[in-house]
Length: 496
Image 1: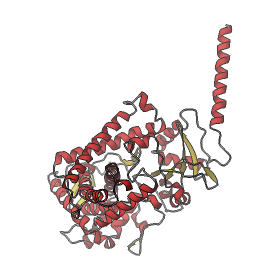
Image 2 (image 1 turned 90 degrees about the vertical axis):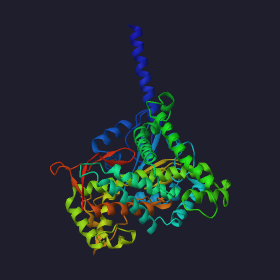
Image 3 (image 1 turned 60 degrees about the vertical axis):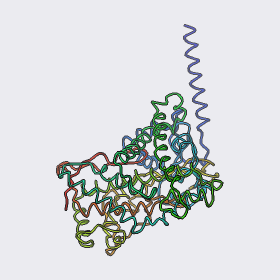
Image 4 (image 1 turned 45 degrees about the vertical axis):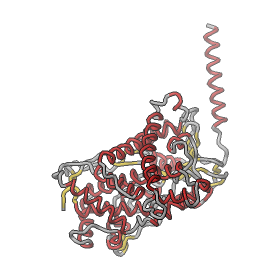
């Protein structure tokens, strides 16, 4: 009896000590951002998952918490990591304009994503990153991939797709697998100077990128919150799969790099790899950061950002056209009146296709593939809206909070492309953040915008998208992960 009582007393003492230690550990200074109380070990993970499931994604959960605490800046604890989440146009613009937030965190999850290399454009920072980003922007411009050359390459890819679609006989189909090869080959041409002609190799690369994206969506949250779990449960946590997929991707890209090295001739550069090799061999050299590892990570960044984001952006666009037949009809009327009967749209046609541009922008406003951008790392201790942001704090920006703000966009949840038309001219809002901002604005923005326009307008010029059943329209609510994407849907593609 005495031992039982002693045991109970000890349990109470231990619980009290843990509670006191947790309260001390998690105690917030007076000028710290508000946020929910974090529990030991898990922090706010359970709450965030509950809200994300209830409202349909982390971006909405963050917005709800921001409103609960009446602050555009809140603090969330996930596992052992404190995350500063920023909402609202003014607050996010402060982050984007301030060089103090230009850095990236270098945690275990980012290391996995970057194969342990602090290289590339997306997750690197510092002087070397600035140099590589500047080189990439100049190189893309010099390759002409925002001009007529891109129109020709992508329209050639569309003609191949159109030939294949003629064999479908208007059967219900998923449109994403149709457009993904076009995007892969468009980017592959930019990087290597040629398209992937062998279908088996193309399908392998597509499958690899898809598997990698899904694996990071599934495992990313767990590995970023509890990085140590990879040592105890490498298979269950997804760590083993991510490493395997990274190795597959590295082998695939290194084979292409080696081919270029063997065939390299100074003065005959016609793609991105050749241009990098010139820097590595003839100009700045490895001592300035132009190494094989750097080239590998730049290519990975281009394909991760370009393939998945562009494909899903187009998938949302075609979904909205299927659901909004009145908008699609108006779009067809504009394309028919502005473009010749047997012609495909060119980049030079953009000024005479304002409604087409408005449709694209409205779809991205409502369903930006990356509604939460970042992560950023504070280089120094600073203050934001009166709250102290510690040095090396991790910051996420909830762009969704801007794009659905009723004070900025009337009826923000309504799909209404006309909001970007003024006097028959396409006039995008300066309040939109579609490709980031500041020094970390997407370096491939011009290429991405051009590709989305050409592929969307080209397919819509030639096809009408119909729902499989007029009584059962596809859902426009997305499925969420590290990015968002449409729930699987089928359409009828009818040649016009």
